[in-house]
Image 1 (cartoon, rainbow, N blue to C red):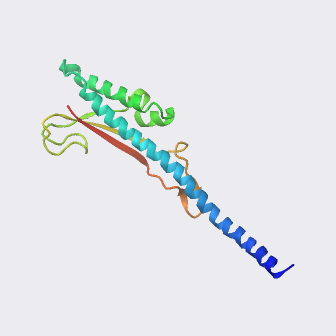
Image 2 (cartoon, rainbow, N blue to C red):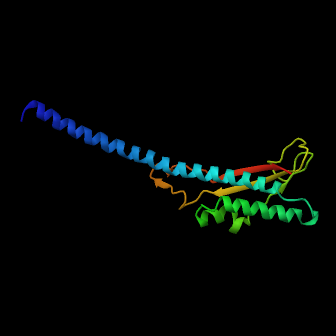
Image 3 (cartoon, rainbow, N blue to C red):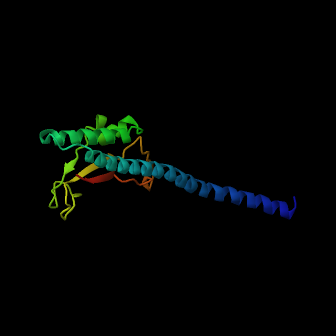
Length: 168
């Protein structure tokens, strides 16, 4: 065997070692990309659903006034449930309940403030309505791998939240 052939064999071994060191990092990056992109899609979907719910509340006629709040709630729940119908049922139900039953739109004070931290602080000239949605980040929808020495990978928040605000 010539000296150049021996050098190539040593180089081939070095390449295998480098590959063995780089491959786990590359796979972790690719895996994180998929998990975070799914979390981003869910976050944008609940943001869209919350805003759609707030817009649906604007379409409710205020007469008769005694059933107004329940009609607003029904419209908001139906529109949010429709916007999130693509989600797996277990994830959707943990976030908005069956058919949106866990969604509770909050009416804020027209002068500012109200029952939610998301109510406008200053007078708005109308009655602000807040539609909050929170999705718990849990397995199996957001799979996390527990790595020795690193813990949960990729790191995920406990919840994903969105708020839609409309002016009635």
